[in-house]
Image (cartoon, rainbow, N blue to C red; front, side, top):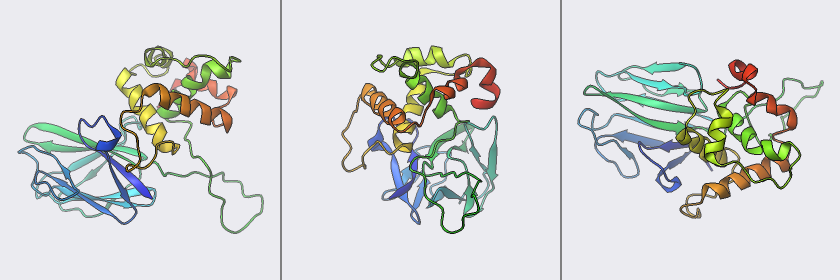
Length: 247
C-alpha cells in the first residue's frame, strides 16, 4: 500500500500522480529517470534530490551542490523547513507539503501528500497493549475538514436529500473563515479528501475523469454515515472560529 503521493507541477489528474510505498525512493531532477519525477528547467540539477516514503511521513534528500530547498506546510501559516545542499534523508512531518526549488531566478514547486497520518486519543483508561487503529483520521484544524463540513452542511441542517453545494457555493460559504479561498483550492481539497478517506481506487483501477459531483456525493455519504462530521462541527464555518479551526 502506498504511503506518500507526489503531485508533479501542473498535475490535474489522478493518473498523473506518483504513489510510493514505505521504503520506496523517488528521484527528481532535470534528467528524467525511469519512474522518477522530471522537472524540465535549466536551473534544476540533473539529479536534484530524492524522496523516500516512510509510513506516515517521508524523507527528503537534497543532492544539489549549492541550493537550499524549502518544504512548506500550506496549512501552517508560514511553517516550513529548510534542507541544505547535500543533506540526506531530512524527515518531513507535514501531512501535505510543498517542495520549493530555486531555479535560475524562479521558484518551482511540487506537492507531496502523506495521507496515512494517524491520530489517537491520549486517554487510555488504564489499558495497556497495542492501540486500535482508527478507521478514519481527520484533523479538524485543517482546511480540508472545513471543506468537508461545508459539503455536509445542507444535510446536517435537516435536509437529508438536499442538493450538494456547487464549488462556487463552497467558495462563498468558506470565504468568511478562509479569505483566500478559491475554486482551485476547493477542488484540491476535495481531491485530497478522496485520497485521505480512501474513496479513490488504486491507480491501476481508477476510472479516468471522475466528475467532481461524484466525488462530493461519495465524500458526504461516507462522512454522514460514519459521523465523521456532526452538527456541532459546523462551528468551523463560523467566522469567530476562523483563527483556530481553519489555519
